[in-house]
Length: 107
Image (cartoon, rainbow, N blue to C red; front, top):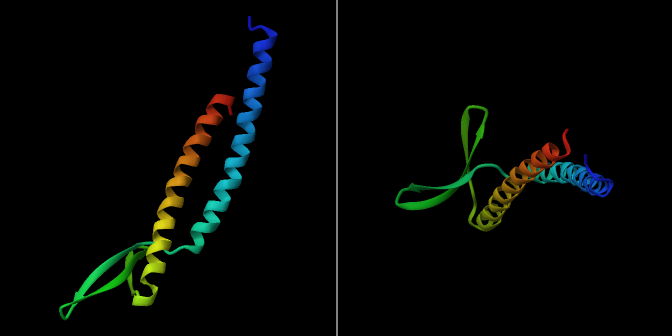
């Protein structure tokens, strides 16, 4: 038999975890919204006539698309791709943490 004090502590912990689950759902929607605004893919350098040019490579369905990245835009595109990687990793960790919290509270 669990004493009342422990039941109350368990109840508090479960309520905190339930709040964390709700917060993580909100964060997930914000991350997904931000990801939609960022480019997909990676930068590949192509050698044409002895010079290297940056191209953004990404998939559309089963096809791979490439777009030339102008010198002026290269830094910006690179930063956006790095931001996308960070957000994708954060989203993955967020989902894992939410699953753990759901298992603890028994949902």
